[in-house]
Amino acid sequence: MKSVIDTTEPQPQPTDVPPVVATVDLRKVYRSGFWLNQKVVSLKGCSLTVYQGETFGLLGPNGAGKTTLLKLLLGIVRPSGGRGLLLGKPLGDRQVKQSIGYLPENAYLYDYLTGWEFLELAAGLFQIPRNIQRDRLPQLLELVGLPLADARKKQMRRYSKGMLQRVGMAQALINDPALIFLDEPMSGLDPLGRYQMREIILGLKTAGKTIFFNSHILSEVEQICDRIAILAKGELICAGSLNELLGSTNAYQVKGKGGDQEILLKWLPNLVFNHDGSWQGTLQDDYYDFLDSLRLMEGKIISFDLARQSLEDFFIQKIQKQNISV
Ligand SMILES: Nc1ncnc2c1ncn2[C@@H]1O[C@H](COP(=O)(O)OP(=O)(O)OP(=O)(O)O)[C@@H](O)[C@H]1O
Ligand SMILES: [Mg+2]
Image 1 (cartoon, rainbow, N blue to C red):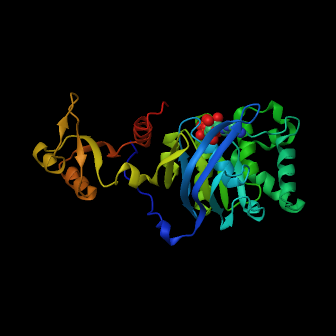
Image 2 (tube, rainbow, N blue to C red):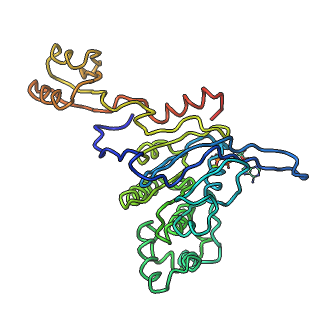
Protein backbone atom coordinates (compact mmCIF):
# COMPACT_ATOMS: atom_id res chain seq x y z
CA MET A 1 0.00 0.00 0.00
CA LYS A 2 1.28 3.48 -0.80
CA SER A 3 2.30 5.34 2.33
CA VAL A 4 0.62 8.22 4.03
CA ILE A 5 -1.28 11.09 2.47
CA ASP A 6 -0.64 11.75 -1.20
CA THR A 7 0.86 15.24 -1.26
CA THR A 8 1.98 15.23 -4.89
CA GLU A 9 0.94 18.17 -7.00
CA PRO A 10 -1.85 17.48 -9.47
CA GLN A 11 -0.31 16.39 -12.76
CA PRO A 12 -1.04 18.40 -15.90
CA GLN A 13 -3.88 16.92 -17.89
CA PRO A 14 -2.36 14.91 -20.73
CA THR A 15 -4.50 16.79 -23.23
CA ASP A 16 -2.79 20.10 -22.29
CA VAL A 17 0.66 18.97 -23.34
CA PRO A 18 2.03 17.64 -26.61
CA PRO A 19 2.70 13.93 -27.08
CA VAL A 20 6.37 13.04 -27.41
CA VAL A 21 5.76 9.35 -28.12
CA ALA A 22 2.75 8.18 -30.11
CA THR A 23 2.33 4.76 -31.66
CA VAL A 24 -0.54 3.27 -33.62
CA ASP A 25 -0.86 -0.47 -34.04
CA LEU A 26 2.92 -0.94 -33.81
CA ARG A 27 3.92 -4.56 -34.44
CA LYS A 28 7.09 -6.61 -34.47
CA VAL A 29 7.59 -10.13 -35.70
CA TYR A 30 11.14 -11.44 -35.44
CA ARG A 31 12.31 -14.14 -37.77
CA SER A 32 14.55 -16.75 -36.24
CA GLY A 33 15.97 -20.21 -36.95
CA PHE A 34 18.69 -21.19 -39.46
CA TRP A 35 16.44 -20.50 -42.49
CA LEU A 36 14.74 -17.55 -40.75
CA ASN A 37 11.55 -19.54 -41.19
CA GLN A 38 10.32 -19.30 -37.59
CA LYS A 39 8.29 -16.31 -36.49
CA VAL A 40 8.37 -14.81 -33.01
CA VAL A 41 5.57 -12.30 -32.49
CA SER A 42 7.08 -9.86 -29.99
CA LEU A 43 4.61 -7.00 -30.23
CA LYS A 44 0.99 -7.23 -31.35
CA GLY A 45 -0.50 -3.92 -32.41
CA CYS A 46 0.59 -1.51 -29.67
CA SER A 47 -1.04 1.93 -29.56
CA LEU A 48 0.10 4.28 -26.83
CA THR A 49 0.87 7.92 -26.17
CA VAL A 50 3.35 9.50 -23.78
CA TYR A 51 3.11 13.22 -23.11
CA GLN A 52 5.83 15.78 -22.53
CA GLY A 53 7.15 15.87 -18.98
CA GLU A 54 5.63 12.52 -18.04
CA THR A 55 7.38 9.66 -16.33
CA PHE A 56 5.96 6.62 -18.04
CA GLY A 57 6.56 3.07 -16.78
CA LEU A 58 6.22 0.05 -19.04
CA LEU A 59 5.67 -3.15 -17.06
CA GLY A 60 5.33 -6.77 -18.02
CA PRO A 61 6.69 -10.24 -17.31
CA ASN A 62 9.90 -11.54 -18.90
CA GLY A 63 9.55 -11.81 -22.66
CA ALA A 64 6.47 -9.54 -22.78
CA GLY A 65 7.98 -7.32 -25.47
CA LYS A 66 9.10 -4.31 -23.40
CA THR A 67 12.63 -4.10 -24.79
CA THR A 68 11.26 -4.73 -28.29
CA LEU A 69 8.92 -1.74 -27.95
CA LEU A 70 11.77 0.45 -26.71
CA LYS A 71 13.99 -0.62 -29.61
CA LEU A 72 11.19 0.09 -32.09
CA LEU A 73 10.72 3.57 -30.64
CA LEU A 74 14.45 4.22 -30.79
CA GLY A 75 14.68 3.04 -34.39
CA ILE A 76 17.08 0.22 -33.44
CA VAL A 77 14.74 -2.38 -34.95
CA ARG A 78 12.25 -1.82 -37.76
CA PRO A 79 8.54 -2.38 -37.17
CA SER A 80 6.75 -5.18 -39.03
CA GLY A 81 3.60 -3.03 -39.09
CA GLY A 82 1.95 0.06 -37.68
CA ARG A 83 3.52 3.47 -37.23
CA GLY A 84 4.82 5.84 -34.61
CA LEU A 85 6.10 9.33 -33.92
CA LEU A 86 8.89 10.40 -31.61
CA LEU A 87 9.09 14.12 -30.81
CA GLY A 88 6.82 14.64 -33.79
CA LYS A 89 9.07 12.77 -36.25
CA PRO A 90 8.63 9.26 -37.70
CA LEU A 91 10.42 6.45 -35.84
CA GLY A 92 14.05 6.11 -36.90
CA ASP A 93 14.49 9.83 -37.74
CA ARG A 94 18.21 10.64 -37.33
CA GLN A 95 17.77 14.26 -36.17
CA VAL A 96 15.57 13.18 -33.26
CA LYS A 97 18.40 11.02 -31.89
CA GLN A 98 20.22 14.21 -30.82
CA SER A 99 17.44 14.82 -28.27
CA ILE A 100 17.19 11.27 -26.93
CA GLY A 101 19.02 9.42 -24.16
CA TYR A 102 19.04 5.63 -23.88
CA LEU A 103 20.18 3.26 -21.17
CA PRO A 104 20.07 -0.24 -22.72
CA GLU A 105 19.02 -3.32 -20.75
CA ASN A 106 22.46 -4.93 -21.05
CA ALA A 107 24.67 -2.03 -21.92
CA TYR A 108 27.87 -3.10 -23.63
CA LEU A 109 30.52 -0.89 -22.10
CA TYR A 110 34.04 -1.38 -23.40
CA ASP A 111 35.98 -3.44 -20.84
CA TYR A 112 39.35 -1.82 -21.43
CA LEU A 113 38.20 1.80 -21.25
CA THR A 114 37.80 3.70 -18.02
CA GLY A 115 34.38 5.13 -17.28
CA TRP A 116 35.75 8.58 -18.07
CA GLU A 117 37.14 7.50 -21.46
CA PHE A 118 33.83 5.85 -22.32
CA LEU A 119 31.91 9.03 -21.49
CA GLU A 120 34.37 11.05 -23.60
CA LEU A 121 33.68 8.63 -26.45
CA ALA A 122 29.92 9.03 -26.03
CA ALA A 123 30.30 12.84 -25.85
CA GLY A 124 32.38 12.72 -29.04
CA LEU A 125 29.60 10.86 -30.87
CA PHE A 126 27.28 13.75 -30.04
CA GLN A 127 30.01 16.21 -31.09
CA ILE A 128 29.95 17.89 -27.71
CA PRO A 129 32.85 20.40 -27.63
CA ARG A 130 35.78 19.57 -25.28
CA ASN A 131 35.27 22.65 -23.09
CA ILE A 132 31.65 21.61 -22.40
CA GLN A 133 32.73 18.00 -21.77
CA ARG A 134 35.20 19.20 -19.12
CA ASP A 135 32.31 20.55 -17.04
CA ARG A 136 29.63 18.03 -17.96
CA LEU A 137 31.49 14.79 -17.24
CA PRO A 138 32.26 15.51 -13.57
CA GLN A 139 28.70 16.82 -13.09
CA LEU A 140 27.23 13.65 -14.55
CA LEU A 141 29.52 11.41 -12.47
CA GLU A 142 28.43 13.26 -9.36
CA LEU A 143 24.77 12.94 -10.38
CA VAL A 144 25.00 9.17 -10.85
CA GLY A 145 27.17 8.67 -7.76
CA LEU A 146 30.33 7.27 -9.38
CA PRO A 147 33.53 8.49 -7.66
CA LEU A 148 35.72 10.54 -9.99
CA ALA A 149 38.80 8.49 -9.03
CA ASP A 150 37.12 5.23 -10.14
CA ALA A 151 35.90 6.82 -13.35
CA ARG A 152 39.35 8.23 -14.14
CA LYS A 153 41.59 5.33 -13.15
CA LYS A 154 39.72 2.01 -13.27
CA GLN A 155 38.98 0.13 -16.46
CA MET A 156 35.35 -0.88 -16.68
CA ARG A 157 36.17 -4.61 -16.55
CA ARG A 158 36.95 -3.93 -12.88
CA TYR A 159 33.61 -2.22 -12.19
CA SER A 160 30.79 -3.81 -10.20
CA LYS A 161 27.34 -4.22 -11.85
CA GLY A 162 26.14 -1.14 -9.99
CA MET A 163 29.11 0.95 -11.16
CA LEU A 164 28.48 -0.12 -14.77
CA GLN A 165 24.81 0.83 -14.43
CA ARG A 166 25.88 4.28 -13.22
CA VAL A 167 28.24 4.79 -16.16
CA GLY A 168 25.41 3.63 -18.45
CA MET A 169 23.10 6.22 -16.90
CA ALA A 170 25.71 9.00 -17.24
CA GLN A 171 26.10 8.00 -20.91
CA ALA A 172 22.32 8.20 -21.39
CA LEU A 173 22.35 11.80 -20.15
CA ILE A 174 25.51 12.99 -21.90
CA ASN A 175 23.63 14.99 -24.58
CA ASP A 176 21.21 16.58 -22.08
CA PRO A 177 18.28 14.78 -23.76
CA ALA A 178 14.65 15.91 -23.64
CA LEU A 179 13.38 12.33 -23.82
CA ILE A 180 15.09 9.53 -21.93
CA PHE A 181 14.55 5.79 -22.41
CA LEU A 182 15.70 3.57 -19.57
CA ASP A 183 15.52 -0.22 -19.89
CA GLU A 184 15.57 -1.67 -16.36
CA PRO A 185 17.48 1.23 -14.76
CA MET A 186 17.32 -0.32 -11.26
CA SER A 187 18.67 -3.67 -12.38
CA GLY A 188 21.77 -4.78 -10.45
CA LEU A 189 21.59 -1.93 -7.96
CA ASP A 190 21.60 -2.42 -4.19
CA PRO A 191 18.91 -0.64 -2.09
CA LEU A 192 21.04 2.52 -1.80
CA GLY A 193 21.74 2.42 -5.53
CA ARG A 194 18.03 2.06 -6.28
CA TYR A 195 17.25 4.97 -4.00
CA GLN A 196 19.86 7.09 -5.79
CA MET A 197 18.51 6.05 -9.20
CA ARG A 198 15.01 7.00 -8.07
CA GLU A 199 16.30 10.41 -6.94
CA ILE A 200 18.07 10.88 -10.30
CA ILE A 201 14.88 10.05 -12.20
CA LEU A 202 12.81 12.36 -10.00
CA GLY A 203 15.43 15.11 -10.54
CA LEU A 204 15.16 14.65 -14.31
CA LYS A 205 11.39 14.80 -14.03
CA THR A 206 11.62 18.07 -12.09
CA ALA A 207 13.89 19.40 -14.83
CA GLY A 208 11.00 18.80 -17.27
CA LYS A 209 12.40 15.73 -19.02
CA THR A 210 10.14 13.00 -20.37
CA ILE A 211 11.14 9.58 -19.09
CA PHE A 212 10.04 6.27 -20.53
CA PHE A 213 11.24 3.25 -18.64
CA ASN A 214 10.86 -0.49 -18.34
CA SER A 215 10.99 -2.02 -14.93
CA HIS A 216 10.20 -5.09 -12.87
CA ILE A 217 10.53 -3.22 -9.59
CA LEU A 218 6.93 -2.23 -9.07
CA SER A 219 7.38 -0.41 -5.76
CA GLU A 220 9.80 1.98 -7.49
CA VAL A 221 7.47 2.40 -10.45
CA GLU A 222 4.63 3.23 -8.08
CA GLN A 223 6.68 5.98 -6.49
CA ILE A 224 8.07 7.48 -9.68
CA CYS A 225 5.56 7.15 -12.52
CA ASP A 226 2.72 9.41 -13.62
CA ARG A 227 1.34 6.76 -15.92
CA ILE A 228 2.02 3.12 -16.63
CA ALA A 229 1.20 0.48 -19.20
CA ILE A 230 1.30 -3.29 -18.87
CA LEU A 231 2.44 -5.50 -21.71
CA ALA A 232 1.84 -9.25 -21.68
CA LYS A 233 2.75 -11.65 -24.48
CA GLY A 234 3.25 -8.70 -26.80
CA GLU A 235 -0.15 -7.21 -26.07
CA LEU A 236 -0.87 -3.95 -24.28
CA ILE A 237 -3.40 -4.99 -21.64
CA CYS A 238 -3.88 -1.65 -19.87
CA ALA A 239 -2.52 1.89 -19.69
CA GLY A 240 -3.37 4.84 -17.49
CA SER A 241 -2.42 6.93 -14.48
CA LEU A 242 -1.97 5.12 -11.16
CA ASN A 243 -5.16 6.78 -9.91
CA GLU A 244 -7.11 5.53 -12.91
CA LEU A 245 -5.78 2.00 -12.60
CA LEU A 246 -5.57 1.53 -8.85
CA GLY A 247 -8.55 3.62 -7.84
CA SER A 248 -8.93 7.17 -6.60
CA THR A 249 -7.00 8.31 -3.57
CA ASN A 250 -9.73 9.78 -1.37
CA ALA A 251 -10.05 6.80 0.95
CA TYR A 252 -7.50 6.03 3.65
CA GLN A 253 -6.72 3.01 5.78
CA VAL A 254 -6.20 4.40 9.27
CA LYS A 255 -4.69 2.66 12.28
CA GLY A 256 -4.56 4.32 15.66
CA LYS A 257 -5.17 4.07 19.38
CA GLY A 258 -7.16 5.86 22.05
CA GLY A 259 -10.20 8.07 21.46
CA ASP A 260 -13.90 7.49 21.87
CA GLN A 261 -15.29 4.36 20.20
CA GLU A 262 -18.66 5.93 19.35
CA ILE A 263 -17.12 8.96 17.70
CA LEU A 264 -14.55 6.82 15.90
CA LEU A 265 -17.38 4.69 14.48
CA LYS A 266 -18.93 7.78 12.87
CA TRP A 267 -15.73 8.32 10.89
CA LEU A 268 -14.71 4.70 10.40
CA PRO A 269 -17.85 2.59 9.85
CA ASN A 270 -15.79 -0.62 9.50
CA LEU A 271 -13.82 0.06 12.72
CA VAL A 272 -12.21 -3.02 14.29
CA PHE A 273 -10.15 -3.34 17.46
CA ASN A 274 -6.92 -5.34 17.57
CA HIS A 275 -5.56 -7.46 20.45
CA ASP A 276 -3.08 -4.76 21.44
CA GLY A 277 -5.91 -2.22 21.90
CA SER A 278 -5.21 -0.38 18.64
CA TRP A 279 -8.00 0.09 16.12
CA GLN A 280 -8.25 0.38 12.36
CA GLY A 281 -10.76 1.32 9.70
CA THR A 282 -11.32 3.03 6.37
CA LEU A 283 -11.79 6.77 6.25
CA GLN A 284 -13.82 8.09 3.32
CA ASP A 285 -14.23 11.70 4.31
CA ASP A 286 -11.97 14.69 4.50
CA TYR A 287 -9.11 13.60 6.71
CA TYR A 288 -8.45 17.09 8.16
CA ASP A 289 -11.73 17.03 10.14
CA PHE A 290 -11.07 13.46 11.27
CA LEU A 291 -7.58 14.37 12.52
CA ASP A 292 -9.00 17.39 14.41
CA SER A 293 -11.63 15.18 16.01
CA LEU A 294 -9.03 12.56 16.96
CA ARG A 295 -6.80 15.19 18.52
CA LEU A 296 -9.72 16.44 20.64
CA MET A 297 -10.31 12.84 21.81
CA GLU A 298 -6.58 12.55 22.56
CA GLY A 299 -6.32 9.63 20.18
CA LYS A 300 -3.16 8.84 18.20
CA ILE A 301 -2.40 7.79 14.63
CA ILE A 302 -0.20 4.71 14.15
CA SER A 303 -0.41 4.58 10.36
CA PHE A 304 -2.30 6.37 7.60
CA ASP A 305 -2.21 4.77 4.16
CA LEU A 306 -4.01 5.22 0.90
CA ALA A 307 -6.73 2.57 0.83
CA ARG A 308 -6.11 1.17 -2.57
CA GLN A 309 -4.55 -1.83 -4.18
CA SER A 310 -0.79 -1.81 -4.52
CA LEU A 311 0.60 -1.74 -8.04
CA GLU A 312 2.10 -5.16 -7.36
CA ASP A 313 -1.32 -6.69 -6.54
CA PHE A 314 -2.86 -4.97 -9.56
CA PHE A 315 -0.09 -6.25 -11.82
CA ILE A 316 -0.34 -9.86 -10.58
CA GLN A 317 -4.13 -9.82 -11.01
CA LYS A 318 -3.93 -8.46 -14.55
CA ILE A 319 -1.27 -10.95 -15.57
CA GLN A 320 -3.08 -13.90 -13.97
CA LYS A 321 -6.26 -12.93 -15.83
CA GLN A 322 -4.29 -13.26 -19.05
CA ASN A 323 -3.18 -16.71 -17.95
CA ILE A 324 0.47 -15.76 -18.01
CA SER A 325 2.94 -17.10 -15.47
CA VAL A 326 5.12 -14.51 -13.71
N1 LIG B 1 16.35 -10.46 -32.01
C1 LIG B 1 15.38 -11.32 -31.71
N2 LIG B 1 15.12 -12.40 -32.48
C2 LIG B 1 14.13 -13.26 -32.19
N3 LIG B 1 13.31 -13.11 -31.12
C3 LIG B 1 13.51 -12.06 -30.30
C4 LIG B 1 14.56 -11.11 -30.54
N4 LIG B 1 14.52 -10.18 -29.56
C5 LIG B 1 13.50 -10.54 -28.73
N5 LIG B 1 12.91 -11.67 -29.18
C6 LIG B 1 11.75 -12.34 -28.58
O1 LIG B 1 10.71 -11.38 -28.45
C7 LIG B 1 9.99 -11.60 -27.22
C8 LIG B 1 10.00 -10.32 -26.41
O2 LIG B 1 11.34 -10.05 -25.99
P1 LIG B 1 11.74 -8.74 -25.21
O3 LIG B 1 13.22 -8.76 -25.02
O4 LIG B 1 11.16 -7.55 -25.90
O5 LIG B 1 10.97 -8.95 -23.80
P2 LIG B 1 11.06 -8.11 -22.45
O6 LIG B 1 9.65 -7.78 -22.07
O7 LIG B 1 12.01 -6.98 -22.60
O8 LIG B 1 11.62 -9.20 -21.43
P3 LIG B 1 12.57 -9.00 -20.13
O9 LIG B 1 11.68 -8.52 -19.03
O10 LIG B 1 13.06 -10.38 -19.88
O11 LIG B 1 13.66 -8.04 -20.49
C9 LIG B 1 10.66 -12.77 -26.54
O12 LIG B 1 9.94 -13.93 -26.85
C10 LIG B 1 12.03 -12.83 -27.17
O13 LIG B 1 12.54 -14.12 -27.18
MG1 LIG C 1 13.76 -6.46 -21.66
